[in-house]
Image (cartoon, rainbow, N blue to C red; front, side):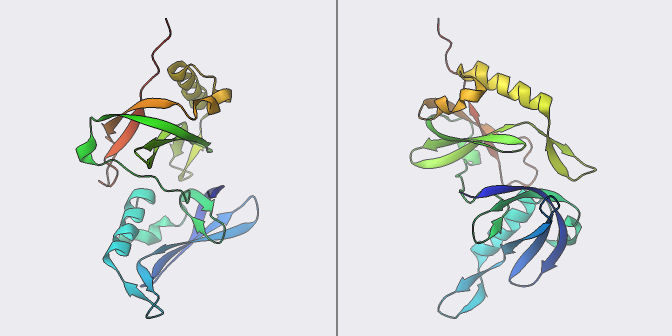
Length: 213
């Protein structure tokens, strides 16, 4: 699993036929970190990068979903901030552990899921769920987007409310949240009303445990 470096500002954007290169400034450490978003895939037989529809589709999805920018406007990313992850020998815009996603056709489904992990980040927590061998993420957000700073910052009051909701929903204190790991929960696949890009049509709502009488 990758480690979150922090919410860093993009100071330079470079683009060619192979990839988009983003240079992030880590002010606290006095370092820069490079993230490459590939447009082409490497062909081992040809020892060169070649055009590939699937790779380019992932590139476009990363721009529209993660970076919220059109492929023609990547230069506008300078000055904006995003979470950057250290994946060992490279940096990424997300945790190297990727999660499956439900599609529009799954909206309304009620399913059983096993909690396998709870990841706590600066502006949210992610409850990692196993459904039939596939892993999905359900977010508990407590960040607020600050337009003037171009980044999401944790809101202590919102975090306190979200943690209180967690305790009410599951009957487990937030500090003891790992007690939820290994338990089976009921989830509903809901429509994502904030899905402006069309690439994340759903989110997962975890249902509360039945209250003990």
